[in-house]
Amino acid sequence: MDVSVHHPDELTVADRAAWTALQSAAQPGGRPQMANPFLSPEFTLAVGRCKRGVRVAVVREKGPSGEPVAFFPYQRYPAGLGRAVAFGMSDCQGLVHRPGFQWDADELLAACGLTLWEFDHLTVGQHPFEQSATGSFASPVIDVAEGWDAYLARLRAKSPTFTGTTLAKERKLGRHHTDVRYVHDERDPAVLRTLMEWKSAQYHRTGLADRFARPWITQLVQQLFQTRSEPFAGILSVLYADGRPIAAHFGLRTERVLAVWFPAYDPAFAKYSPGLIHMMHMVQAAARDGIAYLDLGRGDSRYKDSFKTDELRVSEGVVSRRHPVALVLGKSHAPVRALADVVSSHAEVLGRANRLLRSVGMPRGPGKTP
Image (tube, rainbow, N blue to C red; front, side):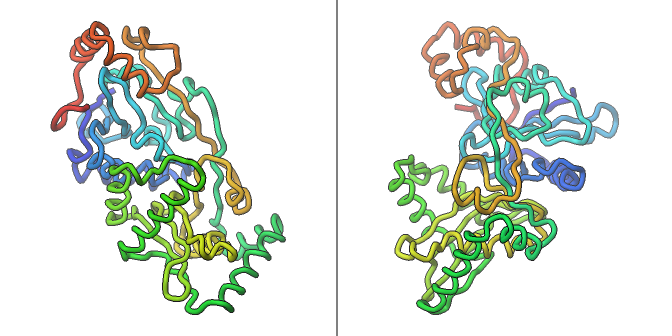
């Protein structure tokens, strides 16, 4: 393989256009997950500006044209340990590639200076990586390719009580409150801050770690909110009542896919189920905008089960090279962060790892990874 490794900011305009073109061809080509916004160059670029160690391997055709045939975004840690970009935050991971492209995982990781690469939302069709998967999981989706009316009819047939109750609560909300309206693409950053406050409070209520307590995640969301390209955008949609937001969602879209990411609502309006009302409007607006499906992300949830029409699959695991460091760390299946701690605490192993990685070549780009 002809592979070069770059910091995301080093990618040329032509390279980014080629990456986007591969994604645009994926949906009609029967590989819908590859069109996911989390696999877009804009997402990797944004993460690279918030986190150190983000790199992109560009695989090119051999010969005069040198056209890119694949892009592999990853995040590198000490001693060549690697993870998917924004691991734990991104809902779709893998190599974006031309149809029919085949690659050797060991060769690709060596070109990236990696001993191993960890993933938790690997898209389907990545056989060289899937062979190392330790689990496969459902990622619910809402198919609106046939339009809103077709979807609503399908929802009524599948969940008549849920659909009727949600629509009735919206009517009740309208009777008891004024100026009930939905905005699909809100550009007010103050509303985004409100959404993040709601989400933080939800994390605390449910006993989950507050993602927005981590400055890089807040920075990433704010940056993506300002990101607009063709066809990528960060989309903030909002349900209003009495002149103020009562439910909102921030997610990412490409030409045909909307990734559902951060939904939340004002608990003061909980009796109206504003999150469900908001979701109804968001699905309708997405269908109107030409979205083929909304990706709800891996994980169980009552609202996902209610709205979904189908499920895609994602997998998790660790793919490793035939490499001395991988053999030393190797078959424990511990997370990469834990492995990095093990390596860093053993000077002999770390020294050997760094010497070996230098012998195969390190990624080029500004600065050092952490």
